[in-house]
Length: 375
Image (cartoon, rainbow, N blue to C red; front, top):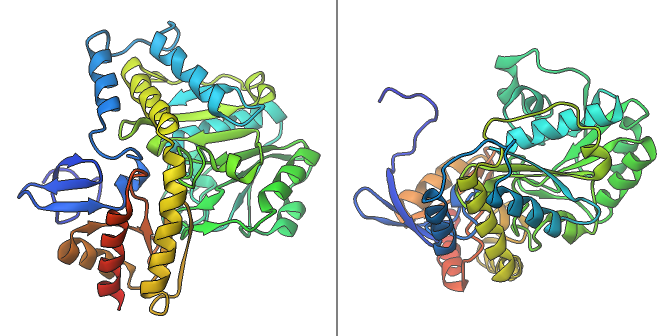
């Protein structure tokens, strides 16, 4: 094979349907990773398929300087669903681009350069977002990155208060860390972050690339936490498998964002897919199902394997099972022997990010498989 982009798995996926994918031999796999949370409605969802097909019959792409009905509708939909007073949207193509924009916007709007980020955090692989990502394995080959970034322990309000000062442009944080091991914040931490950044005149950025679109039991985790940041970044599940990202902003950020652009910002086909995805998530009460099924999975996993693993944690359908350094071996056994696809979160955690439409039968199949793998 001539490509070298990823370390490929020994399973060639050919098609998908709902919570399942199928390899080139026809073997069915329960997709409990949803391709890193990118298909919250499951594979081949009819509402998204129809929206994309209809838009392809009209026009594939028109640049963002020309108004387009699908793009405008998506702007309005995201503004309506975002927590007040966030009502401006910048569209792009991925999560790292959404975070890159947020960091640029924060520096431009505040006139400051310092960015505060968290240990174990992950915000993307472009040069700005990468500078706020914790692990050296992602950063070291590409240094020097942008400067003036300070890291603080995650979920530590006292350390955050010491780091954020009058020179700070922004604090960027995942409400639940994904790549870092599925680490939720404790009660009060996000509220503290809001107070600390507001007092310093710094922007508060919630990286909801993974937690957004209903993943943790509310459309946005910031709504679950009842905290309104200055910016929310989104991607992954936003287009139910099509590449799209968004940076949602308060007015004071949008009015002072500087000069930022993207050729493919909110193309009509992508906007149609994202609009259908968000509308369906809301209309079908998908976040509610994520909350119910997340509680069910956590309870059943604890009963079945709680004594055999280090920890089971998460919010909604963003669940981490800490198995120790054997996470990759567990994932391989799940896939090859039980036809269940899951994800790593570092070397110690099996990560479950299934479609948010799963039911108890899907959950039971995962619990049974995990019991055999770690029991």
